[in-house]
Image (cartoon, rainbow, N blue to C red; front, side, top):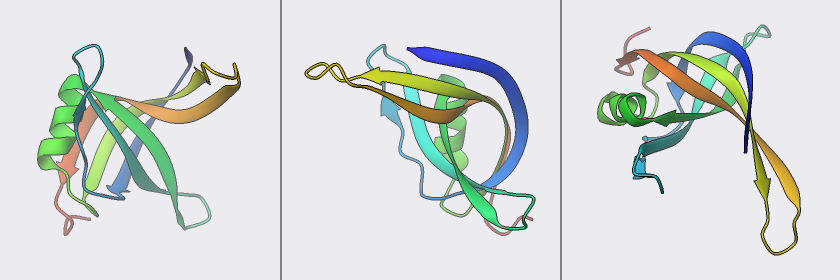
Length: 108
């Protein structure tokens, strides 16, 4: 289950790793990745992100570890229920709504 907060944000961040694209269960491209984004304390913090289809392919085809990505995203919370135990857990992520740019490592 997906809980959407509709709080959107525009970010520039660096990819933590080379992106790995997978085909989801419903036939859509899925890209789970981490962006290091600047904070008000002057340090970069990791942000867990997910992109689908067009946005996922664009980041996968043009992104590299350390490369700069600019996106519009919204905060989401994914609810997971373990089948065997019924235990509920939550995963916080940022859903990529639009890719504004994927740049080489050297671009600042």
